[in-house]
Image 1 (cartoon, rainbow, N blue to C red):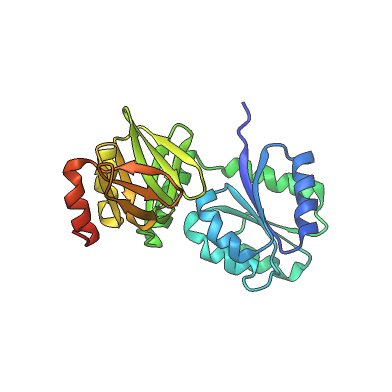
Image 2 (cartoon, one colour):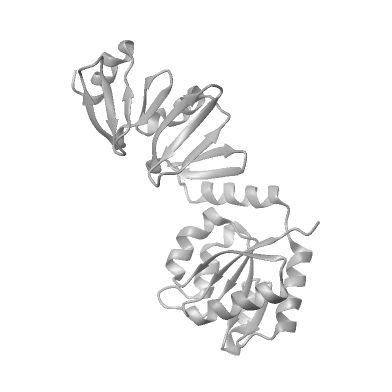
Length: 249
């Protein structure tokens, strides 16, 4: 069974992205293009969470050129193939340990050869995950939390989490973007992880982000309204403690 290799293309020229996308889809079906970026700055922010197997990177880009981008992502240990119209960059490309260097317009045989080289060096998924964990540690992203679901491990900024609700043995994370993540850990375990990051457990089944708390209503036994309009009950025994936590007792 053929295993797809995840790829990201970074090129400030949309035509360059489109041409390379077409060539890869037609001649290198083992490459799965998971994202493209026309901004190297945006690529720098998003690539750590995408963790592709390979980056196809243009060299000449504004604000942050291809070499600078690759150097900043070096700790992720992603394979790099530079693609540019200027052959004077070839030596520097290999000095930064690029897998290959292709000139525009890309020769299909050379592209296939570069992909074949990539396949021979493809790292196992567990090594890719280790690389991501090391990157997060090196960047001291203390507001990140890992959420393991049946589809994989998601690394989410805690500021993106609105609240967590317990449903049987599972915990459901509700995010600002409207997405939901279901994991098999108990809500108690996440309370330990998030308690010092602005989260408060208002009920046995509810853990909320105080940052996304819209209001607390004293009537009807006490409940909160979150920024997405969701209302959640505050347990009777937690009410006074919660108000004290908010500084409004």
